[in-house]
Image 1: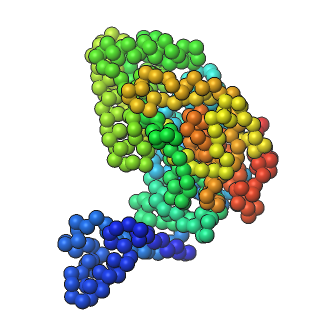
Image 2 (image 1 turned 45 degrees about the vertical axis):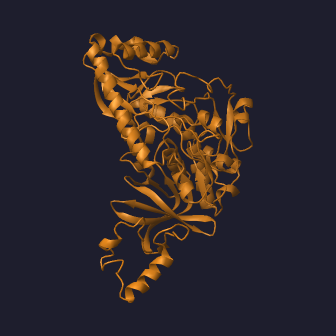
Length: 481
């Protein structure tokens, strides 16, 4: 087994750093109180110190593959499947207990901007084969989240992709400026994994941040981010009686705004003002509906305390509204929550600096690029950044022409051997609000996956791969038919 020595430096911060630890050891030898017991536990008088010292340790490299994908959401699954089909050995790490990310753990159930070649059409076809999709439009539709879990797992098994669930990436190892290994923690402990190319598909840009990449988040003037939303599945006695409150009922794309207004009026009739000004219902199947009811403002996805508070508050609001509607009787009689999402929905995390940054100007003019990997047709969709601004649409009127995402936006600028896919790619605040939806995330994942495969097989770095070369490989494996 190869070994990596990982150290945690705290020399720039006050507390118990290496120098102070050595000094303390010298004091201990001089007869003063010892810092640590034989079991490496802080002695009682040091238990209240602001910092503790974590000694360096050797971590065995568990496996080495061509491509490691961090995150198994829409971008991550597409990256992994495409890389595997292009001939690369692939390993995927996912923090939740299923693949699909926001599609499954987040109970999104509603897909946007999905009319693209490749894996999007394959997933759509497989959902239809399983009877797990509502609506006739191939660009926007509702699906069954648990069937999506099984579908994605089946695709991974078929491609022989190595998958590890319940695992977090907590650190990285670089050789000079090239990312060469990641460190994970799970019930199996702390482990190291090597690859030729890494893809950050965590959504929040966790790997990029750990690698020392520069990044942006939120609105440039103050860092304010779009709110979080927790989704929930519910059961009703007769969904046909709720048609006037359900978005796109029966796949009717024109039936959108009026149901939202009708539904909000009912919530208000129950004596409740929802935190999300445009609360929505979607029909999943039979008498099962998806409820999108809340906004949690001012929370950064890397703030664990903030995320915890938002999750608890959002779940409470879901039940409050559900019980209020149930109390109205009539069509709402028997309304019951059957599952709240494992993961509260995150619209905005870190945007890792890439070789190119997609801008508002690009989306306004419909920019095209020699290395354009996907066409985006979705609008600017920025949910109000504060509760006070919940009724305003200050950004959503920005005109968008269909534009392309360049491969360069998927390649980290500050660290070699790292790519991004999904909402953590390189873009500004306005552009991000358009390309962030999951149909585009899948297309980004495909591009990152095939580029990583070509780079690893031909002993190059991602920025040394010409997109035409990678695109030819996509055609070869049938992703551009």
